[in-house]
Every structure is written in C-alpha cells, then in structure tokens.
Length: 143
Image (cartoon, rainbow, N blue to C red):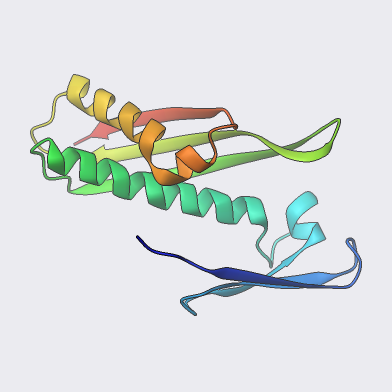
C-alpha cells in the first residue's frame, strides 16, 4: 500500500517552547505550542486537532466509498471530529472522540444510511488506529 510521513520539531521547554508540524506532502507546515494545546489559545494547532482532522477526513472518504459500493452517489459528506483531551493517572489522554456527520445521498433510506455510517465508523483506518478510544457517531442524512 502506501507510507505517509509527517514530522514535528519542538524547541524549548514544554510551557515556553514552540514547534512545527509538517506533512510529508509539503502541503502543510503549522506551528503548535503548549497554550494552543492546553489553554485553548489560538494562533497555533495542536496534536488533537490534527487527529480530529485526520479522523473526519478518513471517515468522510470511507463513508462515501461505502455508499458508492452500495449503489448510491453521495452528493456531500460533511464530517467533524470533536477530540476530548483530559487527564488520567498516567497524564494527558484522548478520552473520547465524537464524529458528527451530515450527508446528502439521493435515494438512500435512513436505515441503509445508518447501517453504512456505523460500518464506516468501525472500519475507517483512522477509527481502527484509535480503537482504544471510545468513538461516538452522530450521523444525519439531510436533503
């Protein structure tokens, strides 16, 4: 199959330092820092936001593929991922992810859509990689 690469550089201490994350494709090169991760400050990204973007993107593509394989032509699949960072006895942890999806799919029944949406949540590669994290799905078929 394929191998994708990304890199990160961190300079300085945890709280005062800063870093960059870069995709191997060269299409993104983003700053990240402690405040953006733990204090909700803007101006930089954080690993959880990147996990959420990867999960939402993977899920949307996978659901589209499942719908197409089932004989439907999706017009639009919009997915977001809410990634919750908390703390346990070992330190910071992603403790849950909520996938929110709205899709426009002419001709599909609600039952068929719900079945394919749930299957996609279980089988998209990012969901599988994050299998130790509880993932909730809110999927909505819209017209």
